[in-house]
Amino acid sequence: MADHYLDKSITYNRWDRSYEPRLSIQSGDTVTIEMNDASDGQLSKESTATDWEKADKMRVHGLTGPIEVAGAGKGDRLKIDIIEYEHENWAWTSIIPGLGLLDTEFDEVFLQIWELGETQTRSMPGLTLDLNPFCGIIGVQREALGEFRTRPPGAFGGNMDVKHLVAGSTLHLPVFVPGAGLCAGDCHAAQGDGEVSINGMEAPMKVTLRVELIKDAPLESPYLITPGELVSPRYIAKPIHAFIESGEDPRELCKNVVRRSIRFLQERVGLTRQQAYVTCSVVLDLKVSQLVNTPTTTITGYLPDAIFD
Figure 1: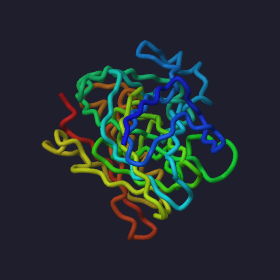
Figure 2: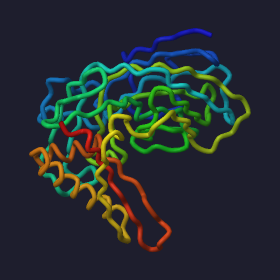
Figure 3: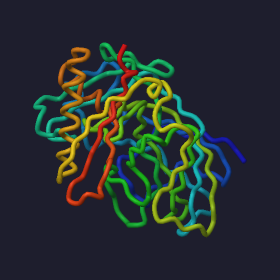
């Protein structure tokens, strides 16, 4: 077993099985992958909303890879142990008119730059937010020929934005093409379930993975084993505020939950509406509470009291 390093000198903004592998590894090897932020290096800790407005959105999700796993073929799976993340002490979250959950309610681009400590950020007035780094995108090349945008996830993994892909987790991915073509990117220092403004805390990072090939082990879609609590231990030491909405349109219910959470943050610590919205995107967890009472669904948004200074 060997240790490898793959830098971010070349990134890709599409899935395409025709890309030549940048690195070949053996089953059981460890690889550290260096990744750009979701803007693919167009933003920095000094960037402004104007910079983001002018950026090329077609470059979103710069992926590092592909990595060839020797001997991998269709019908196999990759077992990926996530060992460690290392961020670069900054991140960003934005609002883009026409995108996100509240897509019609903000008419200007907004950019929040976060200064990251080792485990927390205090960049939002009155709040201390815990960091739980993860890759928004881990995936393998798709079976179909051609180029595909990185935004939609699928059976191949990809832009899943599952915030529990933290260090200590093990991800299983099905293999569709020879060598698998493993890629990673779109790291988040923190994210709420829902990622409602359209971003988590988007951050350049390194991730260290141990990759094992399991032969003849078909898997229909990604499978994750994640350790311990699904909420930061500091957060569950205090009460959780829960905003509950019931009705027949789940997306509208989510919008109502987020609107209520925004007002709560504005009233509690005096945030602007934009600041409150991006805060919801990185810490508010949206959950389906019930589906059984057809046609009514219940959506709950959970906001930890421990974030307030």
